[in-house]
Image 1 (spheres, rainbow, N blue to C red):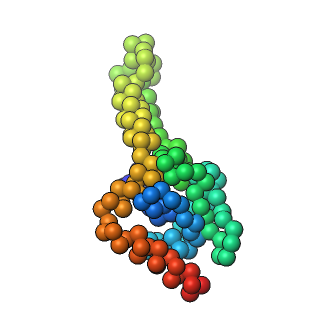
Image 2 (cartoon, rainbow, N blue to C red):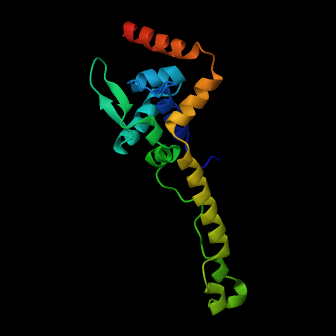
Length: 169
């Protein structure tokens, strides 16, 4: 079972789709993003509500409307997106099992409760490191990485797809 929802992946890819290799932003509707990525429109619309509430995207005016990034793509981290969509989750919830050993007859000795639980400390450290790593990567970093892998024609193909779709609307 995944720790983060599929919505996190959809959100990250959507914001990447709104940025070209140069970091220029493009307004896109949720419907366009859903169709471009072959993901469920209704679910993506809910994700964009969360991204909007978190101040990562803002609705844009104009024919059909849509969204644009609320700030520069190099200032939106993967952790920002994760928190916007899934909230701030804890990897671990300590149940203080160390205090419940059967041999303590319901009253653990003082040494058991002295200091933080070692298991909790390890898990908290793991979460902190994971969040530090997620905060090191931005939408622009990921978009550039994708565009470096793609053939030179990819950017043109995406722009053409969007233009064709808009002309049919």
